[in-house]
Each structure stands twice: as structure tokens, then as C-alpha cells.
Image: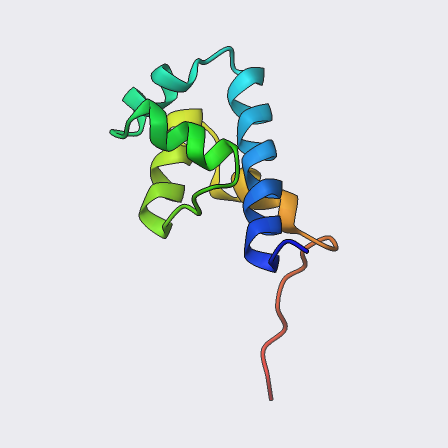
Length: 86
């Protein structure tokens, strides 16, 4: 049985691949935009690696999208503004 982390990696990886492909980018082109390397992008897309926060920021910039779009695959319900606590 796959670990939860592996499952999350696979979900994120598939989403990352879809975003990259939709923009017509190769793994190498995305890696260059993110100041990374092609094997690392490949590992992300296959769910082998989990990106750090700084890498998520660079991926969003490289894909020319917001962080929200990049991690939207993990939203379980629509977001709403948080109400202040009293």
C-alpha cells in the first residue's frame, strides 16, 4: 500500500505535468525557468520527489501561474475568506 506522502507526490506530479504540457513546455524548459534541472522536474512529475516551498514558488513563476493554481489539486472544497475569531 503506498504511503500518503507517495500518493500526494503522485497527485501533485500528474497536476504539474498537465500544467507544463498545457503550456507547451518541455521538462528542460521548465527546469531552466525554475533554475533547476530536468531530472528533478521528472522526479517531481513521477511523484518521486516532493517540492519545497521555495521550489513551489519557482515552479509557479516558471509556469506563469499562481501558487493557488499549482496546488489547487489538493483543494477539497471551495476556499472562502476566514472569519475573524472573537
